[in-house]
Length: 423
Image (cartoon, rainbow, N blue to C red; front, side, top):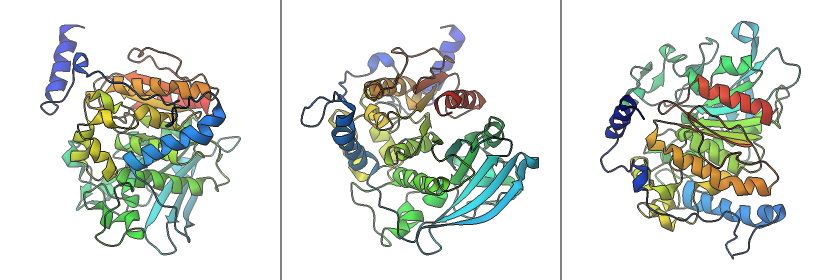
C-alpha cells in the first residue's frame, strides 16, 4: 500500500464516530452458527430437510428477532393503471404508472413506475427497486408524475439541494438520483425497470408508525409489538405488493423479477427476497449492518449504533442485541441463505468501511453451504476477491473502488451477472 493510499484510508477512518472498530486486527473472536444445523441439533443433509425444517426455523429467527413480522395484505387490495405511454423516452420504452391500493380505501397506496423496452422479442426480466425521492428522481422523463408524499431533506445527508422544498417533490427534483435505478442503462440492455418511492410505503422518520402502511394495521398512537415489523420490513412488504402487480402484467416475465436496493434499501431487498420466493433473484448492494455484513464482527456500523440512530428500522426485539451480538440466534449469513438457491449478488465498496466490506463477503461465504446443498455452484471463491475482480457465480460478490453508493460500474456487473443467471 503506497503512502497516498494509506493517508486516504486514515482520512476515511477519521470521518467515522469515535470508538468505531475499523481495524481488522481488532475484530473480536466469534463463532458463527451453522446454517445447516437445526435447532434440535439435527444436521441438514438433504434439500427436503432445508425446505421443510431448517429454512422455516431460520426465517422465524430473522422475522421475530431482526425485521419483525409483517401482516398479510388486506382484502380489497387492487391495481389502477393510471397512465400508459407506448412511445416514452423517444419511443424506446412503454411507460406505465400503476397505483396499488393496499386496502379497499384510497389510502395507503403505492405509485409504481414501470418502463418496458419496446425492442425486445419476448417479455423481459425486470429490475425492481425502491427509490428515496419519488419516481421522478430516477429519470428525466417529463411524463412521470411528481411524487405527492413525504420525502426527506437530502441536504442532511450531504447531498446539497436536491430540489426538495417543505419535504415535497418539485420539478427540480426530476432526475436527481438516476443511479439508484438507471432507467436508460437497463432499458438499453433489454431489461424492464420498476420503482416506487419508499416514502409511499412508510416514510423514513421516527414517527413513522402514524403514517403509510402502518395506518392500515395500527391504531393511531400505537407502536408495533416487539416482534412486529419496523420500517425495513414495511418496505420489503411493499416491494412484495409491487410484485403482486408485476406478475399480472403481460408485458414482463413474472419468473424473472429481480429485487434490488442499495444501503438501507438493500436491507429491504434482502428481506423482500426472504418473504416471497416469487422473486427470481436478489441484488442487495452495500447493505451493511442488518444486511449482508456479519453482526458478530462488530466492524464499522454495529447493532447498537444502527438501533440507536434508526430505532424505527428493525423490530424492537433486535434492540436486545445492542452490544450483545454473540447472543444473536442467527447472523447475516443465515439471512442470505434464505434466498437460496435463487441467484443473489452481494456488492461492497472498498472505502465503505461503515458497511464492513469484508463482513459482507464473509456473510456470503457463510451462506455458501446452503447454496451448494440446494444444487448450485454457490460462491465460486473462498477468499475475498481483489478490487474490481467480480465473482459472477449464483452467489455473486464484488468489491469496487470508492465509497458508499452505487455507480455505473456496479450496474454493469449486476447486468452482466443477470444476463447469465436470470436470462
